[in-house]
Image 1 (cartoon, rainbow, N blue to C red):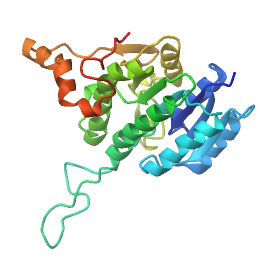
Image 2 (cartoon, rainbow, N blue to C red; image 1 turned 90 degrees about the horizontal axis):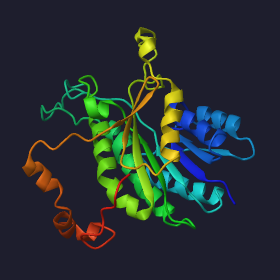
Image 3 (cartoon, one colour; image 1 turned 135 degrees about the vertical axis):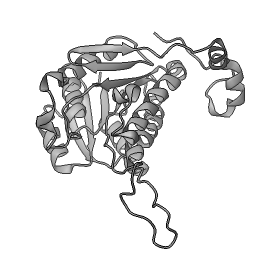
Length: 289
């Protein structure tokens, strides 16, 4: 029987690389690493490529065609299967909503638009990746697969310095919690990892020495979280990674009975959105573990 296959975006370093290494060495996976840094990604894939277990592809995930091609090539390289998608690629804020970094248009006197590449990488490309993963998961001999999204604790707690980044990570939490009940009916699990702070390439070099290193979460906690997803059919979870702890963060309670009523009108919502859903109204929400 062929080995399971995973595709990991942003897999050339940090969290993505740690997951790739853990899947290969502990869970017996073959892994395709996607990254925009060709030199770094190719070197790490070569290091991990014992017995043809790792492949690197240079891909900008914001380019749908590039990402789609990478999924196709992964499936072919993996012998016609894809078992896991890890959406890990991410960037910090590259523009400001507090001041005009790019100046003002001389003709109109209006500010130039905010550069939203942070949302393109952290959110839009993730959604497109999940869309592609679902497509290939359902082509497996036994349909189904696992999706892991790297979010951040800023996705639930926010931060004033990184409003675009925080917004993208908030959105991922909502996306995971929204899609999980429907994906479970397709034998697809989807979960989000929310690290508190792990030292990765997102952290500016000048700032790294200033952090209290006792408060940094080690990459071993990422591996622990992956194990919790692999060993059981866990889905719809947002898992905070804090030092050596993996904390399953629950959705906040409904503020009023009216809010609860609105969110639980599943069949009516499904009737309104029937063309978008895989099954007839009332049959789309599966039971989560």
